[in-house]
Image (tube, rainbow, N blue to C red; front, side, top):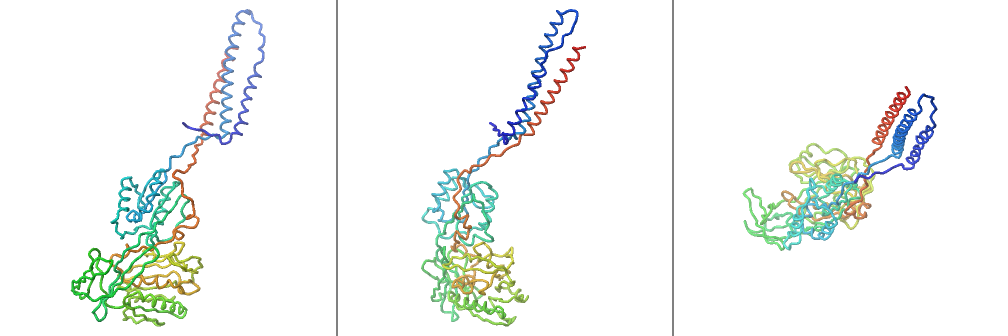
Length: 524
């Protein structure tokens, strides 16, 4: 049933007093008729009585019409509106794919079931925000609570910041309860400002098992060194295990790992082949690193040299490091070139990235002040004081972010190599990176060889803190209710009331003119 509302009832009430005007005119016009001397009073008396009866009826109808016109205009002045009830808006539960595929889902099962009982609908935080049926939810829940769930998980391929922003735009004015893992690899770009209807709860990923990050054969060729990795929400750690070099097609056994088979290939290279997954190539040479700097970046070079030497302690074979103020020879074989200068990198060295060189560059502009901290799990926050004004490359991968979601270190792949761009500097006037004890830990994963097809990524359990994923205001916001009170909308009906008043006025004029014509005919 439609409901109506008068938005200005006081003005309408005052205008309604205009009904007194036609009533007063009606009463004023009821004066006695004139006496007409005619021959036969008997017929005059009968005709007068009939005329007076007809006139009285027509005047009453005109009175009602005129009062109705005034009432309709008074109603239009009161600004009437029809209330349109808003459609129901159910709360939404958004679950990220990486959480659905991990054993961490069991930690939020009770909360999700409670929200579903309150009326929340279940969706997957994926393209199109597909709904999850009750059967699908029970299937995921049973997998998460099973005792044989593997520790390996697939990280979310989406940028969760962008995906939640898309959900907030696609489902406006609805309470959204988001559940995701907090792994760093799932957050890229700039942290958005989300509406107050979003309540985001992060779940730490389960600690990973042990995996082989790299394998090295000593120069004498009699032993093998394995770089083993393990990861949790705070950090990814590596350790080195040395063993005797096995025979061809022999087994390599490491506690906590499935058996590995040592295979010597026809090209003279060897690999470690696990039971499942890609093979790990066996390296035979140490990394070759070079730092080139000018006078303005001398202090940056000292910080970088110290950090690289500290990071090399985590590598099975100590890398070869050179520091110089002259350009490396074009024939020099390098794995890494740290270019600490505002001058452009020569084209010859830029082209070497396609053949496997990794090129590091710092901010080359004056930069702008900033007040942020590096968004990395650390006991001590690393402050950033200045950053460049260059945006990250669209094809680049953000490796380090600050607490505001801005990239600090980006990587752009080029052939078999890559270019790393640090959007700040190691100089104390730019950041606290150079003096931080965390810098070697941050550089170590970059120096280690990549596994084929990024096989190490599913093991990375490093997580961001809630304060880095959401702003302080959003993180402390109360959880939205399952059904928000939606204000109704109003449809303006004033034009229709005015049209009604015009119609009544036209009818009143027609009846009034008809009465005048009838009176004139009766007089004649």
